[in-house]
Length: 196
Image (tube, rainbow, N blue to C red; front, top):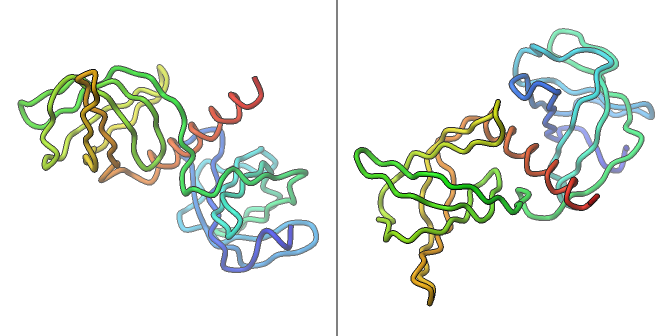
């Protein structure tokens, strides 16, 4: 793990309950694992419970599962994982995601159909000509228990021969918890698809 995790490296930890996600910087690396100083109070992080870990490295997004060996104030000790993998070089995993949603700006509502999704944004299609200058509210339902509410900013609009508009856009004003929820959701979906 020494060649993958280095001092000062930023690592995100996601336990089973997304709402207790946290991040921190590595302060010590040993043969058995590494220590990291958390940015936030470690609420909901439990010793010996498996968590997901993500870190952006020069080789791409590093992903692994491990557990907390020790927890003292804001410093946690993580056991070396049995295995790890690099997910991809792009910043956020992008998955196929087909859902009917609405973009809302004041009294204006546009019906859209999503094509793909990442923690950074999404690509959608619509029959309506949407004002690219406006910032829209959107609610994305990931499951019966999980929804993401954020702003959606249009970046590029293209009209196809079929008359449909294909829109690429990014999320704005998205909370860290919602961003981590999307990162984990997309990574898990990608892994499920690869294992089919």
